[in-house]
Amino acid sequence: MKNLTNSITRFLLGLKRPSSSTNKRLLHKNGETLSSFIIREAVTKDIEDLVTLHIQVWYETYGNSKHKLSRDYIHRFWKEAFERTNEGWFCFVIENTHTHQLVGYAKAKPYASGDLPDYAGELNKIYLLRNYQRLGLGAKLVGHVARRFLSQGIHTMVLFGIPQNPSCGFHEAMGGRRLYSANGKFHGGYGWLDLQKLAERTPV
Image (tube, rainbow, N blue to C red):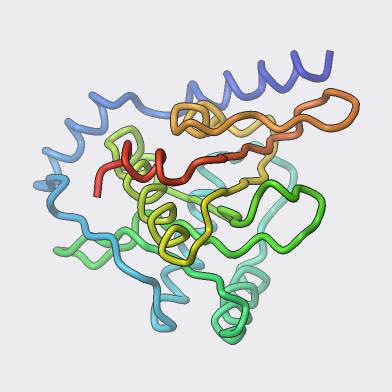
């Protein structure tokens, strides 16, 4: 019953997401093309923009949630992350080269927990503004993460989410396989056992 509820919630949240054709028209209307965007490594000066992006995407995805985000908390999260330079984490951002606005990011790190010994990397977060989804930018982000992990000798990756997230379909389209608990329940986790294959199928 819970799995059905999660599926319905995910479906209803997904209805809020614009189609690929809608976002392509919006892109054209704004005088943008996919070549307007670059993917680069996040730096400390991006913190305020990352905080704004983090909060905006969260509310676009879960706007009806009773849980409210604190900007101070999210700012502290990113500030402390950039201060922890010895943990091996990295973050790629998508930047509009004309406006310098950040429209998406992916944060990842080595996966050190022994709970899932088959996985060595973790895609910690992947956020993309609603108006820039379904344009291939998310796939590019995932590809950048996969290639970075491969350069570090990491060939597998895990992602932990929630089953109500409408992005579950995206993770599955990217080749992620659902991870189930010992009692057979799905809690929103996905795994990739071959990052080389993922890197080859995603655009640079």
